[in-house]
Structure formats: structure tokens, C-alpha cells
Length: 235
Ligand code: SAH
Image 1 (tube, rainbow, N blue to C red):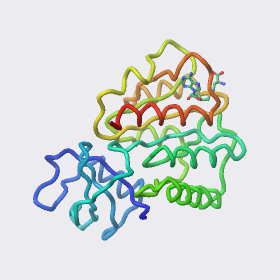
Image 2: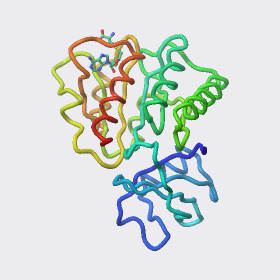
Image 3: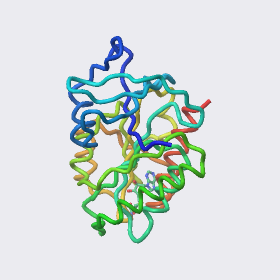
Image 4: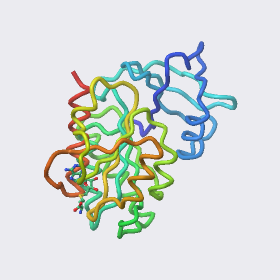
């Protein structure tokens, strides 16, 4: 089982065995994930085809097609404002079981915690254990915590949602079918998002969504969001 990051490419980006990365994808792979020449990642076409690929001097190269049986057909990134205590560990474990591809911890205006580097190692270990337990083919990537603003600005996913507990927003369930490509979904801390954060997310192409009429805990919202997306995408 490998800890490889996934990106979604359009079929037209694959030419012979080269992947012509968009500037955003290149930025994501090389700057956000810090992949260097020779390092591997997974390219998905969002329609069920996966390839093992490698960064090369120019762009990226396909090494081989991959056969996957226990992975979701979409790459879901959970962007989560760090909750209090050990709440994030719980979320890493359950969202890995639910098929998340990438977890991006974010420091929001109302985040109380600034995690130590040891925490990141611990979250990665928990993800690896949970992936094994769920018989996943891949371990989700856990990114280093960044500010909320940086995270939303750098997001390249073609479907972007932010969960907001209050307001008259459409239910996530009504928005997610049919879905192809990759998805990012953001959930807030115990104190919720600030109005400024919601505005920043909207400016970066995120759509605010509801998960129902009750206020869920910060650690429950990601599980509900992941379940809804995976149920809509997995047949
Ligand atoms: N204290 C806040 C709620 C925070 S709940 C308040 O009173 O408004 C923590 C996070 O979970 C929220 O920021 C949101 O992202 C998510 N969440 C909880 N319930 C939700 C719901 N019903 N719909 C959408 N998102 C929800």
C-alpha cells in the first residue's frame, strides 16, 4: 500500500505516455505536495481509469495503469479546520475508512490549536492503520496544516464545497450528482467559520452547502459529508 497523492486529469491531458499538467496541477504537485523529479503520484481521469505517474523534468510521465477495487471513483479532499483535543485523530480514522483521498488540516480564524510537527506524524500513522484496516489500496495523504486562506486559494478541485451550519444553503445531497473528477469539501471548527472565511471561500469558487437542519459537531460534519459524496459516486 502506497501513500500516493491523486490528481484528476482531463483525458486530453494524456498524450502518448506524457501527462500535460496544467499550471495549477503543477503548482499543487510541486509546491503544495513538494513532489520532486522521479517521485510518483496517481493520475485519475475521474471516469474510473487510474495511472501510476512520475514527475519528470518537463511534465509527468505515465508508468502503468492501475487496477483498483476498494477506492472511490472520485478523489475527495477533506479540508478541515483543526478541532480541539484529539478530535482530528478521530476524523482522520473515520474519513480514511470512508475513502477520503487527502486530508488538509487548516488553521481557521476560530481554530484554537496550533499542532506540533509530531502531530502530523501521528495523523499519518493513524491514516495508514485505518487504510489497512479498511483494505484501501492507498493511504490518504495528510497535508501539513496551512492557513484557511492559503488552502482555499490553492485548491484546484473541480467541485468545491464549504459546509456552513447556518443560513439557507442547498443540501449537499442535492448538489452532488452526477459527479466526476475531484471534490474538495471544507468543514469548520467548533465555533464555526467567520463570515470573512465564507466570503473568501466563495471568492475561491467554493459553494456553501448545508448538511441538514441540525448543528453537527465539528467531528461529525466531515463523516456526514464524506458519506453523502461517496454514496452519490459509488454505484
Ligand atoms: N458553533 C457553530 C457551529 C459549528 S459546527 C454555530 O453555532 O453556528 C462545526 C462545523 O461543522 C461548521 O463550521 C460546519 O462546517 C459543519 N456543520 C455542522 N453542522 C452543519 C450543518 N447542519 N450543515 C452544514 N455544515 C455543518
